[in-house]
Each structure stands twice: as C-alpha cells, then as structure tokens.
Length: 272
View 1 (cartoon, rainbow, N blue to C red):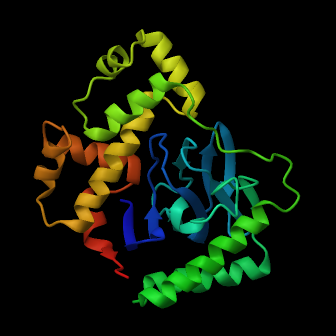
View 2: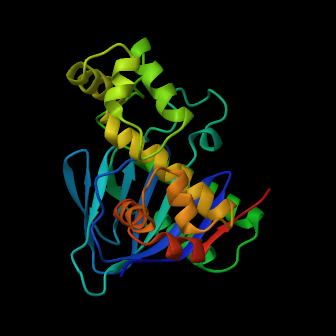
C-alpha cells in the first residue's frame, strides 16, 4: 500500500516523501510539480500523453494544470519519491519572471549539483526541519530545477490565459463551492453553453477538462481540511459532496495514491 513518509505544508506549497506502489488517476494541480526518484524501482509517469521513465538520474517537471499520472513498475514494494508542489505566487511574487512558474522542459537530466540538493532536501523533509532551513533549501532546489529545465529548452511555452468570459464564469461557479455533487451540465447552462461546446471550449482555454479541473479543486479542499482541521474523515467527505466515507477515500486514494487517514497522519504545517 502506498504511504506518506513525510508531508509538509507551507507558503511554498507542499514538500512530500512518498512510498508509492499503486497507479493514480490522471490528475492535475494548480501548483507546479517536481518529482524526484530517491529509492527503489524506477517508475513511469505520463505527462500530457508523454510517457517518461523517472530514475535517479532524471527529473520530471509538471507545469500548473498539466494532466499527468503515475504508473509504478514494482507493485509489491514500490519506490520512494520526493515530490514538490510549488505555489506559483511564492515562486514568483514579482513580475520579474514574466511567464511565471512554467518549466522549459518536462524531462531533464539530474546533474551532480542537483542530485546533492535533492538528497539533502529530501533528508531534511524526512527529519524535523525548521521553517527557515526548509524554506531556504526548497528555494535553492526549485530555482536550480527551474534554471536547468530551461537549459537548451526548445519549447518556450507561455502560460495560457483564460480569455473567454463564459469559461471564466464557469471557473468562478466551480470555485465558489467545489464538491462532488456539482453537475457540470448545470455549470454549462449557467455559462450559456451547450454541453459539447462547454467541454470543448473549456479544454481549449484551460488545457484540462471541466471534470479534471473540478477534481483538482475538490482535492485542494480535501488537503486543506485534512491538515488544517481535526474534522473526522467522514465529515470532510460529506462536506465535499461524497455520499459515503468509502467514496471519498476511493477518490482521495486515486488522486494522491494513499488513504486520507495515512496522509493526515504524516502531514505537518510549517507556520511563518
């Protein structure tokens, strides 16, 4: 069974160390995403329909809202991964980096310098870091990965802007009360679109389907509730529109790789 070995939430986003041996559903994050293999058998990761083999000499970088999933190769013992979810506002609060948190390449080599930073920071996350030490190490590691991703990058991808007012309206409606009971057909009608037009336009504007976007919002609410409150798991699931705790647990495990109880047990919040 996949499990969280260490989880820290902070202004930077999330820093996690997972032992994973089960596949995920295709999912996305509002944050940028860096994935490092630190032990066990290499695994495959699909990013926007590109299949990559993540080993201890490579890095996978996933841009905000970019669909991806995890495919283990060792279903018995799994492998250990150091995973970062990077808050775009923390990464680039000023407009100095016009493109914001956009990596130049999805897959790039793990240089000796990067390898030292990765292993040192992963060890720090697995220990008991102070906010100052972890924040500093994460900044150095994330900046180094960002710069490395743009070395000889051929695809200067710019962040796509949502320009259609109907898609913006639908995003606002979804964000006001994300939950499993929300009907996307009703969101389409509120935005003044037929169902096929809504799905096609939404994906064109955002890069993801409405269903995937809504799942991401639900997961953000679930993660916040697990680490910021002591509410029972069943209550969190009911508040998010799930009819049973088992339904919520299945949804959470399919998107995070483990049960919400396991995630909560490992999670800590770093306060400024």
